[in-house]
Length: 265
Image 1 (cartoon, one colour):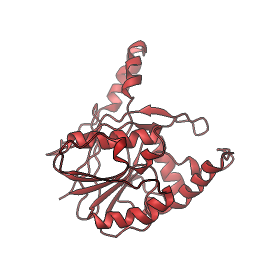
Image 2 (image 1 turned 90 degrees about the horizontal axis):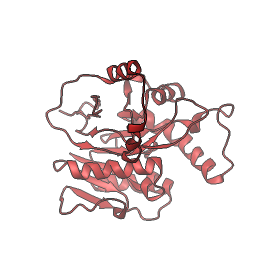
Image 3 (image 1 turned 60 degrees about the horizontal axis):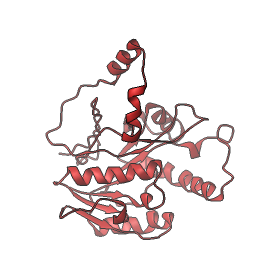
Image 4 (image 1 turned 45 degrees about the horizontal axis):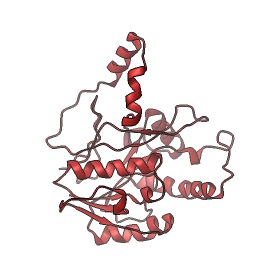
C-alpha cells in the first residue's frame, strides 16, 4: 500500500502538533519496510531514509498552508498514486478523489467553541487560522473514512460540534514524552487509584497478523474546555495497515501499548 502523510505542518512550528508529526513520520520510517510512504514535508525535519527505498519525500517549500493543502497536495497525491492519505494536523484537502481513503487526526475543536467559552484571539494570524479551520474541518470530517481524537473528551466534542457519529471516531490517548516521563518516578498515587486506572486501560484484542509501530509525540488538551494547556506528549504506539476495500476503517486499541490499526482486505 502507498501511504501519504501530510507532514508540512512540522515546517511551521515544532510545538505540540508539529512534534506529533515529526515523531509519527520518524517512527514509521524506522518500523516499516513493507508499505510505501510519500512524506509531504521538509526532509530536513526528519531522519534520513538511509537507503530505505520505501520512503519518498516531497518538499512543499514555503508555500502558504491553505494554498499547499487545498491546491498542491491533492495534485501531488494523485501524481504519486497514493491510496491512503493521513492528515494529522486537524485539516485536510476538501477536494480529493473519491477512491482515496482519508484519515484525519482532530486534536481538538477549540476553534468551533462559542465566544462565551473561548475568547477570540487578539493575534490576527491565529484568528485567520481559526477561520480556515472552521471552514475546512466541518467538510473534511464528514468525508473522512476515519477520524482520530486524542481523548474521549475530544471525541465527545467532535460529536457535539461536528455531528460525526461516535462510532466513526476513535479516541487514541497520547502518552507522555520521554523528557517528562523521567519525572514520573517522583510522582506517587494512592494504590487503589493506580490499580483502578490500570484496570480501566486494559482492552484485550486480537493482535493483527502484521504491524507497523510508530511513536509520535503530539499535543493533548485538558478535560477543562476553558483552561486548556498544551503538553508535549507521546502516543505509545501507532499501527498502520490500510483501509478495507469497502471503505470501512477498523481501529483497534491495546494497552499498555495502545495501537491504531487500519485493517484492509
